[in-house]
Image (cartoon, one colour):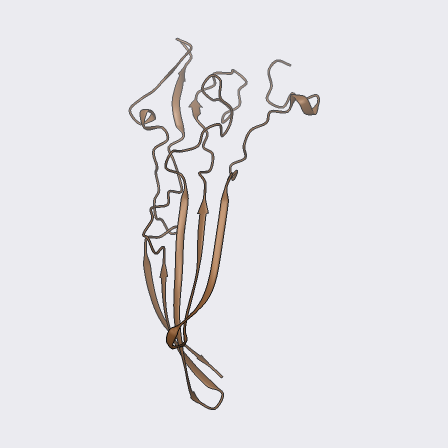
Length: 171
């Protein structure tokens, strides 16, 4: 049967590597603090280490006829982590409430998302090279020389700093 990717005869033969969402460190903090003049200050901060990225080789260097399982020599799936892949975001909220009638309350709210305007990347170039069948070598073009560069910052998932103002009415 040759070197087929699914030739696993026991647990020891199964290839092991980090999953796509393998985040090694993750710290989340939140707080609620009462400030003078009955102002409430709260927030949430999130910090995560970089996710793994795979170094893909186009072509079929291992000759198994399956795409997506070809990596540079000595590497496996998701064996690298980008240098600039850490995530950090701090969101804060200030709220001042006023009671203006029996049992009725209105609050003025100011929220800042991504307080420090951190660029949080959500994608990296993963194309390492192309296998040349004639030479048996992995060749790299100009795009592939930029392997590991970030491709997407502060997108819809991780926007840049935003300020939001609001009013809340309660009975």
